[in-house]
Image (tube, rainbow, N blue to C red; front, side):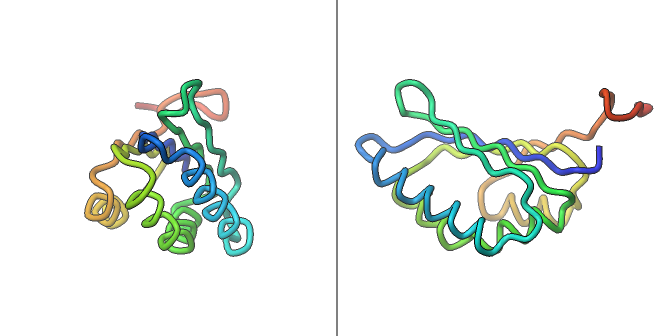
Length: 124
């Protein structure tokens, strides 16, 4: 597994759904216009519109870093005003420096290393 995948989950502040959606549109606009390596950036809202899950895929850590730098400003607004209780899981190889940076800004991510799958066998 060469790619780096991120699944982030957080809650939407009560009464802020429409403003939340507007801010998500801004994050996606910046992603489309500035990112050169983002392979996937999909946002999902649960049935009662109280939680959101984001699925992102990058070819490598550099793509993830580029995305985070490009969307930093709009993401700060998102979590300051419209969302809370953020937790992210990272799937793939990322450096300890990146984990430290994420931890300082958003709290510690859960990191999973690839073990087995249809793509290629790996030894654990």
